Amino acid sequence: MSRVSAITAFPVCYPEPNDGGNLRYLVFVRAESDDGAVGWGEAITQFPEATLATTVLLAELRTLVVGSDPMQNVATWRRIKQATWWYGYRGGPAAFALSAIDIALWDLKGKLLGQPLINLIGGAHREQVPALASTHAFNASLEYEAERHGRYVRDEGYIGVKIGMGKRGDARLGYELARDIEFVGLLREAVGPDAMIMMDRGQSLVWDVGDAIRRTQAFERHDLKWIEEPLEPEDVGGLSKLRGQVTTLIAGGEREWDVRGFQEVIATGLIDVVGCDIGRAEGITGALRVIGLVEQANVWFNSHAWSSAVNTAASIALSASTPRCLLQELKPDESPMQHELVDEPFSQRDGLIGVPRRPGLGVEPKQSVLDKYRWGG
Image (tube, rainbow, N blue to C red):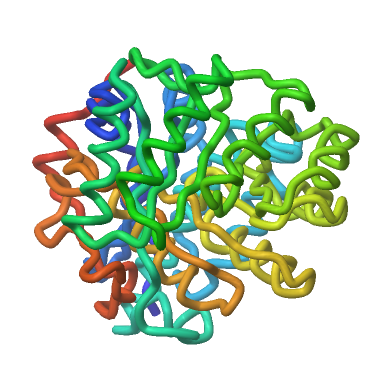
């Protein structure tokens, strides 16, 4: 019987072209078995302090994993949850560490069994998932940004675009109502009449309910598919008012850490699209529980995969596993953690991305790339 023999953390810092070249942070985990198999996981820590804390935690939590049976990965997930209750109740750095370990153990399990992740989680509802170009606007020229995103649809075949507002750079989207409305109008012209458009408020912006209503109603004139995180998640009253004034889908849930948090979000009846990132929401095991809630409530699941090819591989499988998923977000511009990290980067064709069918996650990060971007705190 195979046993987990080692858990190793690799924190990295890299420039993200889809975020205007700004630095972003991740922590990878390598899980090894005593018979030589290797599984990979990832935590989307995003900031240096969270990356440092997660790396320290992983060095201690590995004692709960080493020696365990890779086939009993969900039992290991529960053991880590129980052990980290004091500093991981409902989220925080413990959830980052748990996410990375959990993903790595699912990958390891699949490789030992010779089975892709999609088979381990119950099989595919479909073999290809519609692909959306998900990126940030950072250029001061609205015409430039509209045309840039238009090319993803017209020239590359994506089904649409999702654009983060309030991001670093000079675009300044999300701050001036008239400017935002002008941009979405230009964007519709650039992507054509049939492409999906999603707009994401971004966590650095704070809108009141009036801001959210005015923007969403104006965007709807250009056939907005969904508005993401339009208000702070605790503003249930504001979301209720927004819900009564708009017809577009409302997306949320990105700040939740565990199934209980997602359960509370879904129970409000105000969120149509539930965003879940496996690199922070307790891994694949956590996401499967969220999908169960989504299916029960008949809302939509959206796997927020905006980090590395490891996260993307697992996210595509999760997206393909449920009929309650509209699409898969992909970074359209080449990124170190998507294109440099693996030999065969994920790419869509004609607006579709196929489900990975190699054992485990179906990707193998290059150690040389992890070493190149390794971050020491």
